[in-house]
Length: 484
Image 1 (cartoon, rainbow, N blue to C red):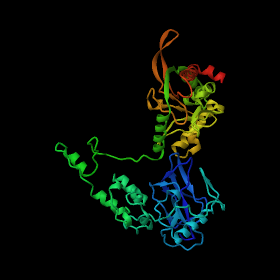
Image 2: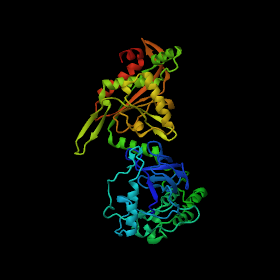
Image 3: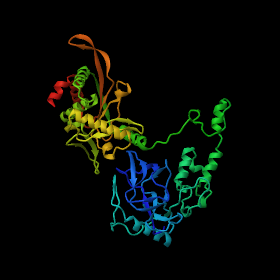
Image 4: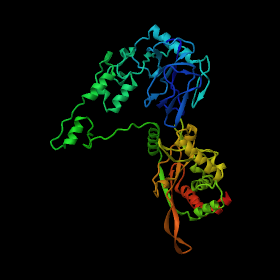
């Protein structure tokens, strides 16, 4: 690597995330960039983030294409220093630490010098702090020699659309028969998108390195399973095209990669179901008085009349003060002991449906806010979440979640607790139902409240007491608000 070339690696964008999807480049090769100028938009499991450049200079190379998933710590962009003569991008060696391919191949002096050059360049930065990341800004500490046992892995330019680049030197350090036989993330993506198993491909590159041409060949000549005599012609054609599902015998219509928010939701829900012994209690509630109170407030020409969810949120925070066991976290310590962690305050999360999937932004210190203030913050957080601009702190700091699934036209739900919280309150749709009032049958506005809770932190009595407290506040909102 030229001493005039600065390589910026994708930083950790928050809370230990290991990858991000490159949504859009904001610069192109040849552009002049300044320190802290946004260079790319990336989408993590938390939010959409603009990544600023820690260097000033001329863009020499973009390491990735829009739509590609990049690993944290991998090269994102190469920038030539200000005033440096531009030269065609060439493969450059750098130390990849523990994630490098371990083969026992000795590091050449040239590769060692190149790795040292990268570490020297890495010390110069803007000092600009990303979410969970900061550029060193000239710090002199840190490792000055390659880790023992690591090898030099060679950077390479993105593969052109028509011609294939020369095989990288790292191909000669591959362990045969492993997935490390694929160096290019574009090759991996091509194989994944077309359902091609890399284990079944013999690479044509040096030492069996799987090249793009190998995957293209596998795509163009898929294995054709023998069709049973009674298989319809359409199914036989689908089998010939490699899109027949082996279990059902049906043609596969689509394959959607699980990533971003959907991937984070899947992991979180799986962990919740596997670790939390949850129980559920529910109750039907007459919300007529609450609706009438809000309608009366609107008649007074108040432009900022809180929504129903804000009033319920206010009742929830009051209920959690009375039943704090539901505003905790269950933890297992390093020595294997277990403890229930309580909080001096309430960060009230609420489920928000967005184009990117379901997210749970949280109102910080919700217990200190009025219904009107809660309404304003809920609206603000909903807007930034739908724009993909919510911060990891706004999306990951809740202590209790309120879920208004009634907006989807359903009455109830066996909700999955938002791990690592210990409880979630769900609110169903409000509909007309027959209800007994003072011994007389009447039509009332009725909703269903459902509380899912972690049975490790409390028993049913506590859960039922909290649920009944919120239900009573909804049925008698004036008196409840007066006592809060």
